[in-house]
Amino acid sequence: MNFDKLENPIEQFTRWYDEATHSQEAKPDAMTLATADKQGHSSARIVLFKGLYQEGFCFYTNYNSNKSQNLAENPHASIVFYWPVLGKQICIQGVVEKLPVSESEKYFHSRPRQSQIGAWSSKQSQTITSRTELENKFEDYQTKFKECEKIPLPTYWGGFVLKPTRVEFWHDRAHRLHDRFVYVRQESQWIIQQLAP
Ligand SMILES: Cc1cc2nc3c(=O)[nH]c(=O)nc-3n(C[C@H](O)[C@H](O)[C@H](O)COP(=O)(O)O)c2cc1C
Image 1 (cartoon, rainbow, N blue to C red):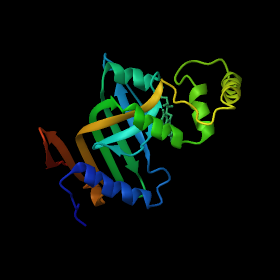
Image 2 (image 1 turned 90 degrees about the vertical axis):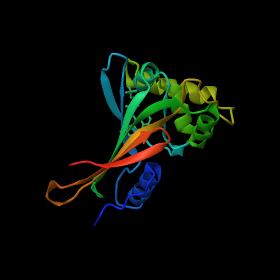
Image 3 (image 1 turned 120 degrees about the horizontal axis):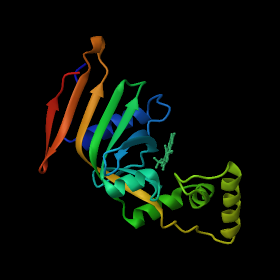
Image 4 (image 1 turned 135 degrees about the horizontal axis):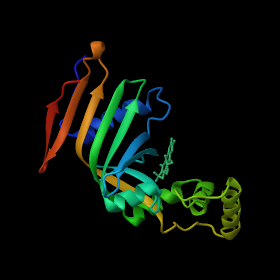
């Protein structure tokens, strides 16, 4: 079967992502996010894809975490989705910016109350002495927000959007002759190239 390409990589992504969410993939929304500090030291971790915003890929996190500190120094980042059941990979490069607070508010309040309290309780990426310390903090915030119908969004928590400049689609094929198509942003257009596997 030939690779059936659309002209816009976001539409192409949406087509593959829909397929992944309707397949047996255990975590179709899990993506590896790679960042680098200003010296170019890289780090990677999984975050959850939380939808598209103005043709960019959204995720939510703690703005004081390691990844966020990297992004403050160097907004260039990469995302990789891998769906083994479908034999598909998407590698995305781009530039990251913070989502508007209104978007973060919307998402934060869509999460279960306990997760909202969890965000208050965890200084993500900082050293802690024990799990008990974390659990005590959680209890403290449960008490603090007991009377509070709507838990406030912490100022240090919110979303990012990665605006893509390069999007590569990889599809497993026989004899290691995999399909690779890359969309490269040139001014306001996307140029599509095929790459050797
Ligand atoms: C399946 C999975 C989903 C995750 N989703 C998120 C997420 O959406 N946001 C987040 O901040 N961390 C998420 N994490 C935790 C991160 O991988 C990471 O441990 C954390 O963000 C701290 O990373 P940092 O110290 O590099 O900033 C997830 C981990 C896994 C395994």
